[in-house]
Amino acid sequence: MTTLDPEKQKQAKQYSRIKRRLWLVDTIFSALYSLTWLFLGWSISLREWLSTITTNDWLLVALYIIIFGGAYAIINLPLGYYSGFVLPHRFDQSNQSLKDWLVDQLKGLAIGAPLGLIMLELLYLALRLTGDAWWLWVAGGLLLFSVLISNLAPVLIMPLFNKYVPLGDDHKELEERLLNLAKRANTKVKGVFKFDMSKRTKAANAALTGIGNTRRIILGDTLINEFTLDEIETVLAHELGHHVHKDIPFLIAFGTLSTTLSLFIASLALDSAVSFFSFTSPADIAAFPALMLILSAYGLLTSPIDNAVSRWRENMADDYALSSTKKGEAFASAFTRLANQNLGEIDPEKWVVFMFYSHPPLGERIEKAKRFSAA
Image (cartoon, rainbow, N blue to C red):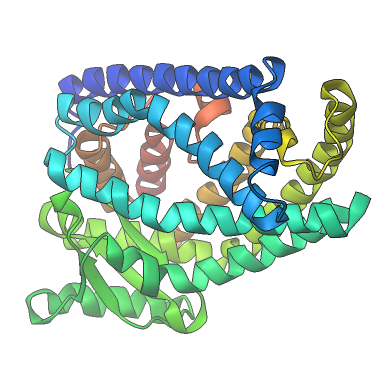
């Protein structure tokens, strides 16, 4: 049975506290950035200047987004560098060189920027063509996108960042155990794969990714190298619990409802912003900072609800892992090891859990497993 490292817990609390402060700085900066563009008139001025270059709506949106988003990305570089590279190294959580980290950022930009631009172009197409019903069309489009990305991410996007290989003969017993777990859960998987998680981090993780024919079990090499077979089995059983409880379709449906509501509220608030800032219409690209502010505020207000729903489903998955494996001690040991290895805080303040935690605190999960073993 793995024991909790008190020194690691001190570091975990400090690490979590710093990350929350950085989140607060980033949130405030993002809001101030958009407000500056609105109240100083930069947004309308940029749209007017771009209108002298092109009258094509698609090109106008693209140029505006590139300038607005590019300026934000450049100004935000120091914060991104500190939170993404310096801080994890300070707490010995990262194995990446600066070169590798920069390559990852460029890969993310190469994928995220075109995807984001396409989605925003479609958003403004809906605003131009569908009038007051734009929010409903956008919600439907986002639903299709979420289903599509769930299928394509394991085979097209994730391999760009990590190398995935079958477990092979070196881990035959582990593979057989995990495939047997999947069979008992009536879950068809393409196979069990390991990936080079250690090239970036000392943290450990496992997941069941994909939908239908792309569904597969993936294990970080840090998990395989540091955890016992029983511990890995309980971690994967938790992931299978999500499939048994149909959490992916549930969360897609819940997310779609939440997104639809947010877009409906945004449509009402955007009409007010158009009047207040003298934009030409909701489809005016100059109103983009206002739309971002509205959606960000909604997300901030509703994130505790989203997190509570997520914690509920995570608790259900924990219950499944314990009941299906009957290995409460291994479960407790695995999550204790995760707390040590990932610098996971086991007893965060209640308000922190309420605001930020999509999973139950590690301490609660460990105690649940111990009670299961003692029963």
